[in-house]
Length: 260
Picture (cartoon, rainbow, N blue to C red):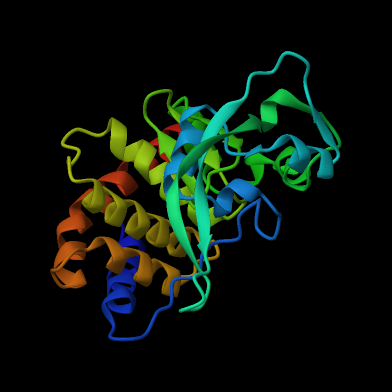
């Protein structure tokens, strides 16, 4: 590791382990401020929607309000809606009691047609080539695209070697890219939480090393949320070796490309 890289990583450690307040502010997603009804559904219904292969499902009339119509022959998926009974005995204030659930049909966005949705415009305008170190993703054969990612800012999926971005934030991309590099290196940890700490620490390090915008407060809060009961410093120290391995891989790819 070069002297500059070592200094950058040391300074980053000092910033992250400093005893300071850090509120986790979610990165601006492509769907922020846009009304997607299923984002307000129960976790069970959101899972059922995702399991059906979509991030946006709505009722027939909801699609109509959005300027879209359900395609002929489209099959509905079903969510569970609570059935509430209003009890007004006169002795107490009127209260609602749950009597059960009923299945309600909704339709996937992919099974509708009509007016372009607000988030579709943002997704269409997304330019992966503007992301930092995109050449490293290309060298790994990783495909990068924009998409609805729920509450996540992005994700790396090893099954098809792809990164889906829910925003156009460079720091988020470097987090997912770090996952992609981590995935091809030997000795990957089986602890999901630890791997998240590695990816976020790596993203912050790469941002600072290469001069990209970095929100250190978000990084600090993110790492603390995954560090478990142990002090965050112990988790970071354990993760440093893996971060260095990720950096060395990226540095090697860049050196090879420059020498070619």
